[in-house]
Length: 81
Image (cartoon, rainbow, N blue to C red; front, side):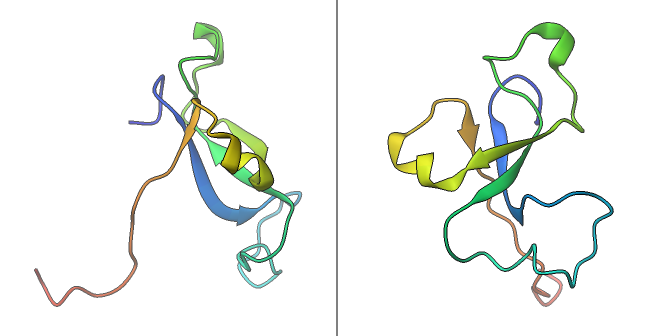
């Protein structure tokens, strides 16, 4: 559910396209801006796009912004469970 609830915080450091998995943008260390996807309840209806890509200053996380959240996910093999 990426539309209308919260923008989804990703682990991807904000860099211009084209995306390359080996260009350092997945190295989640230090300060800077990360990519947030989707749209939140703060966005106008015509701005609700699942592919929306915005930046978010990760230092702002301590402020508890009500329009950004995260999703727990794994890419590990869970052994067929």
